[in-house]
Image (cartoon, rainbow, N blue to C red; front, side, top):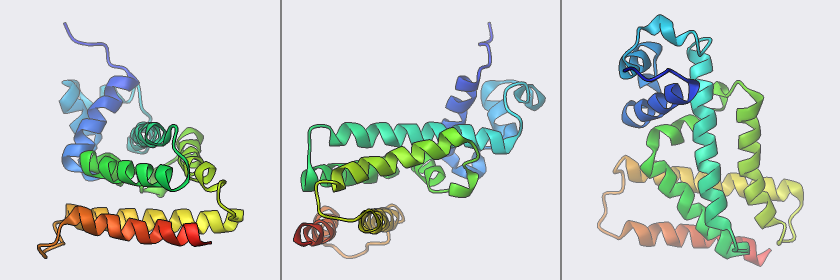
Length: 185
C-alpha cells in the first residue's frame, strides 16, 4: 500500500535530495521519483518548484534554528556565542544542502520562512544584549561572525586547507579573536 502523499513527505524527500545533490537536485521530477509518483501528482500539494524550495528552505531554517537554540540554552555571552558558532558549523557540515538553501535569501518566498530567519538573528541578538552594543553594532557583529563561520566552514568542506596544522585549533583561534574583540568593547 502506498503512503498518502503530504507536504511533509514531499519536504522530507526534498531534504534528502538537498543534502545528497544540493539545490540543483531538488526538482519536481526528482521528488516524484523519490516518492514513486508521477510529477503532475506533486502539483496537488505544491504550486511549483519555487513553492517546493520555499517549503524546504522553511524546514531547513527551522532545523538550524532549533539546533542553535538548544546549543545556547543556559549559556551567556562568550560561552553562548561559542556554542552556537560550533553548532552553526556542525549544521553546515552535517546537512550541506540544507545549509546551502538557508543561505539563499532570494529563494525564500513565504513570510514564515523569512520570519524563521529573523528568529535565528534574534538568538544572536539576545546573547549580544549582555554587551554594550547598539542595535547597529550588534548587526555588524552578527554579520562578521556569520562571515567567519561561513568562510571557514566552506573552505573546510572544500578541503581547501592543505597545511598540516590542526583545523580545530585554527577554527578556535579565529573564533576566539572575534569573540575577544567583542569582550574588549
